[in-house]
Length: 131
Image (cartoon, rainbow, N blue to C red):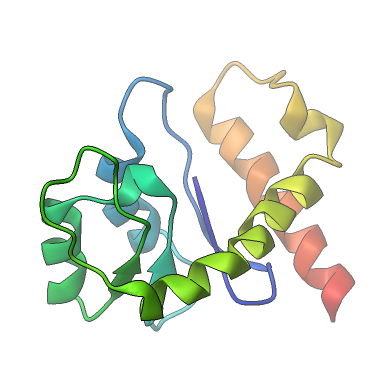
């Protein structure tokens, strides 16, 4: 899981097994960020539309922007913040950049710590290309 800034550059990266839902990994990913300050807003897809996640992030001063789930009875966001959802492609661009590293596309490492080290190395290469 990754958090990117408005330019698509990595802010936080976290790895986990495939079984937990992404909503449960948001706080872990934010705790492993590269910067001191927390982001003001997070933009996610429909899977992140959760009342529990909204409350947890609001306690930390972060606004969650996600389109409503089709099963949601009470819609919590109007259309104004969802305009920012159109810029979600910038996060997808980060994953495309990470996909250029063959070592990250195919996980050759058996240990999670080694793979996380290569993910961090890929993020460093992306950041160095931009500056």
